[in-house]
Image: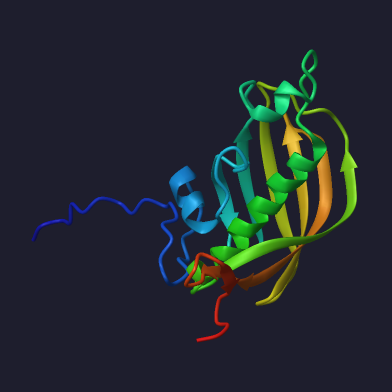
Amino acid sequence: MSESTAPAAVETAEPTNAPDPKLLAMDIQQIMALIPHRYPFLLIDRIVEMERKVRLVAIKNVTANEPQFTGHFPDHPIMPGVLTIEAMAQAGAVLLLSEIADRENKLVLFTGIDEAKFRRPVTPGDQLRIEVETIQWSSRMSKMKGTCLVNGKVAAQAIITCQIVPRARKGAEGTTEPAGSGE
C-alpha cells in the first residue's frame, strides 16, 4: 500500500461559475475577476478572511502615491472619508458576488449609506482593515455593517446598502444597454 502524496488544497478563492464553499482568502487578481473596479479606484488589495454570506475582511495598503493625496491635502495627506466608505462597499460587493453563480453577468451598485461616522484620519503608510458583516441578504439587495480600522482602532464605520443588477452590455454601435433588454 502506498500513501497519497497529493498536495494539500490551497484555501483561496478562484471565481468559477458555482460558489466555492472554501472561499477564505483572495489575491488582487481574484478580486478583479469579481468586481469591475480598477486603478485608481480599486480600493481593496486582498481578502484575508471570508465567512460565506456572513462576513469578510479585506486589506487596503494606503500609499503616498495615490492620486487623491495630491489635493487632499498637499501638506497633510488624508484619505477622503468617502473613499473609506467606498472600500467598504467594494468589500461588500466581493462578499455578495462570491455567492452568485452567474456573477459575470451581475453588478453590485452602492445604493445607500446610513450612520456613517469618521473616527480618525487614514494617512499614507496606514494599512486599512475593512470588515463587512451582513445585516440583510437577498438575491437582489443587501445591507451590511462596514468598519474600517487602522492599528486596531476604528477609523470609519457605516451601514451600506447595495443592489445586485444585470451588467450592462455593449450595443451594436458601442452604446450600453441593460443585459437582457432587446434582441
